[in-house]
Image (cartoon, rainbow over all chains, first blue to last red; front, side, top):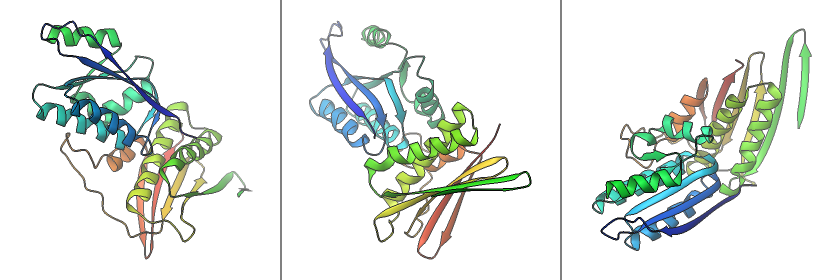
Length: 127
Length: 139
């Protein structure tokens, strides 16, 4: 049985423009069965006007090509919307998922940080 | 169903699984591949890679292929002397994957990933059925 869940949490970025950073946390197995939920949650945030999304996949144990496609779609939508960005958080210990990101070329399209704190402070610095 | 035959030092195990062609069954497809890979003696990374490739092939079968009359996709494995092959069969007409070299494309990553993560990917197209064979050699 596949287990997947995603939660969100609006974290204050501390940036001068007051723009909110939204942190989404995915866990479990993100396959073709779960990818639509991932897409929905990301699109909800973009539709709500959020432009800086952080997706923490540290506890994702499996991610397939359809989920990678969802992430690439989100990157494109955020870029098209102006100065939006998607930042990925993937802990160092999560080697299987990092490897899939590398092989699929995703790491060439997004910033990947080891911790949520690191991702948020990079966003604040980027302003 | 599973049987083993031993002839001299050539050992061959075969197993199969039929799954409803539903996205919710992908976990069972990965577990089948993982079990076959562990039993065959592939190391941890290789087991993960083969299960990943099988997941991609079954996803394609569900998305682009067609199930048998009972609504199922067929998985089987053949354990040879030095390589394990998992076959994923559907009963649709093969649709050539759209290979995209654009890193920003949302589709077309399945086959390139299968090729990267296995030692061989073969597609056999017969009238009314398509079979993808994914092989991984013992290190």
